[in-house]
Amino acid sequence: MDRINTTSIAAIFYSALIGFIAAVASHYFRDWIVKISIFAEERLAFDSMFLYFLISLSIAACIVHGIRKLANINRFEGPADSIFAAHRVDNELNIKHGFYSTLAAFSSAAGGASVGQYGPLVHLGATIGAWIKEKSKSGLSTDIFIGCGVSAAISAGFAAPIAGVIFAHEAITRHFSLRALTPISISSGIAYLCSELLWTTELPLQQVTEISNESFNLTLIFTLFTAPVFGIAAVIFMKSLEKLASLNQKIQLSQVYKTTCAIFILSTIGSVLPEVMGLGTGVIALTVSGQYTLVMLVLLFFGKLLTTTISLSFGFFGGVFSPALFLGASLGALLAHLLNLVGITEISYQTLSVCGMASVAGAVIGAPIAAVLIVFELTQSYQMGLAALLSVVIALMVSNAIYGQSYFDNQLLKRGIDLSFGRTGLVLMETQIFQFTSQNFVTVSETATVKQVLENMIKQNRSDAYIVDTSNSLKGKLEMKELITRTRSEKALPYADRKPISIKKDASLQQAIEVAATFVGETIPVVDRKNNQLCGILTEGDIFSEYLRLQNQIIDLEKR
Image (cartoon, rainbow, N blue to C red):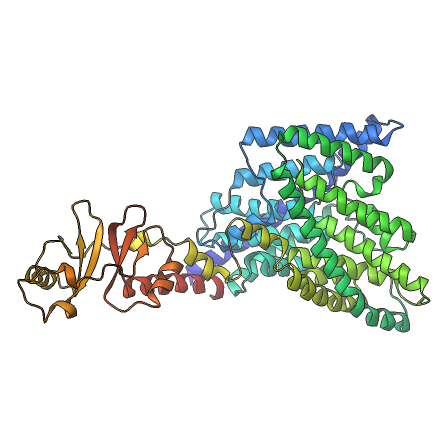
């Protein structure tokens, strides 16, 4: 009982600490982006917006490049890395890279690049959680600490504590357990409480108002037709990010030259349409309230799509969640305008804009329930929550059918990390068989007789043996049942299986299970495929014992 109380008190303390630190970090991350942007506008008060963006983006690019060189980072880290760390048994998260990546995202956003803030905040929260775990002696697993940090970041960033808890479970840890729910909820609640007591959070959905039942019901019906468009928009956004990132890799120029070209393009677009640069929080608020014309909404949608994909693909770093909210809001308002033009005037601009925000963002990040709850908590409107729910699930069906998993899952998939089979599949693919390969097996020479082989089998209590040459290269496998009726003075080699079922020495446990599924016998040889050398053996019992051990470990992590 004393141990349980001590563990519970420690869990409450650390989760509250993570919530407080994440809330402070989230607030000053966002606040200083705004302050630096205002300072830059005042100091760089040129008549030409092109010159303003050219200077601010160049400074930001230099800082990001300097961070990359200083920290020796080939790739900045984001939510995908948080998800991967939470799914690993060792829960390894590079804390140094996490903080440097946050600094790079901060510099990009403060410099006016068209990037998001919430993705970096999510990974910052995960990094804070992992850092607290490293410094503490808590018995809680690291994925719970990561979940605490993520929930706190979402809670503080959106002033949505319930959505923070759900997002941590739905998008990051992807499992539910009472052991995880309590600390994650405490972190989210503390982060929200700190944000409300210490600062006032201005959010783009606070001005949303209730609409008449007739207007809402009609809008809800048309949501069935607009939701697939939101899903397609999410796919276009994710595909565009991937295509431009691929184009960056194909262009045979120095990254400095490529980033310089991107800065000139972004500065040109920003000089004509400054609304699509930066975080765009204020523009989202104006869009939801119906302040833009049809033509302007078209420009906002395609301008944001272009500037974000260029920014994230050619030298800057940041999130995709904020741009997804921007794209969804502008597309929703655009569709409302089009419906009004054809005579359907009772459609609510606010409702379709909010549905667009939730749908595009929910499809991109792969967290539909969290997206709906963010809408519900920000608007305090049952109408908006219901409309967003209907829109998000349809949009997600469309995006999944065309694109597949979320943008973060596909980022991991391109790195050879498949989360579609959950934590169990990932662990099986990461567990190498050399950890439990046995050296207890019978080897004989190519000239051995049947008698010699049988004597060796009996002596070592084995029913099979392996023929190897002087360099330990595998020449065949012998079975006792095949030799028992043979003349003892005969050579054993003719009765060997020259191409036995084998497992390569660097195989994963998942691959070993697939091989063992079609195997009949006592042992499976583990072979170095480069030189055909025999490295050891595995039995079906070895394979499935290790599988059961890992399965129990994962069940303990996810359910207990």
